[in-house]
Image 1: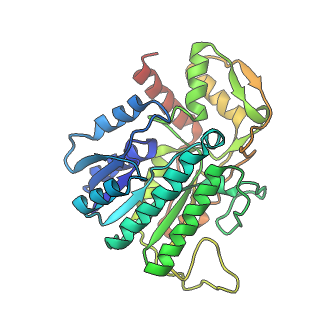
Image 2 (image 1 turned 180 degrees about the vertical axis):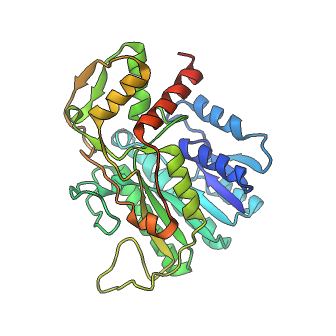
Length: 335
């Protein structure tokens, strides 16, 4: 298939693009390579893709409607995976306007481009952050997500609502994926595993918010990408069991679905750090701090819907995934 991947220089986007190329798809990457984190890492991810048969790249932002539409017109994708976004919970407290431009205006441009060009299926990144103030665990797609704790979370909830509107009005098949704490080689420098590794190797203390009492459904990158591909290949139709008198938030009488995509096995942050210490062969100095604004204490993905519909089955334990990350980190940064 011809597949447009936005955010192709990102952590998930680069790995997804590689897997799609390996199975014979033609991929157009679209990314603005902004400086939210080190652009050289994004360039290095892209370097591994460029030159491969079937891959091309366009540099531009989602909010640049003309550039995005030109990419659609030049490539004529059959399916689209929208992973480009302004990420990060904490950064949304500092620069909220970036989230509106990329995640709201930008996503609107993606929806319009898909609608007017007959795209067969739009898969887009949502986030576990949409569960916000929910404390019932595990988080299920049938749960209400009306209490976001950050503008980032609110923007992702808005994406789900916008997608449903287009699925309803224009019968555009859309699938939203609520990602749960993705980690692994070539990961994002703003994520905990990357920062902990950097600080431990430098002999600096690591900061543990909520006094390290967080639990997270850490999900290895290859498990995530396998789930994205299975979802991309599974075009949703109207749910024949949808009841408007008792609506299920995850389905619709339109071609619309929302899924959790996680490991279905939450891990205490302190246990996660112990595995990292073993992989590095060093002990961390720990600074215990209170819960940060916008953060949630626990995440735990109920992935039963994704398992039922596409056979999703994450299989990488943190003991394996963290070792692979450390091996990559030491090689890439020569430490």
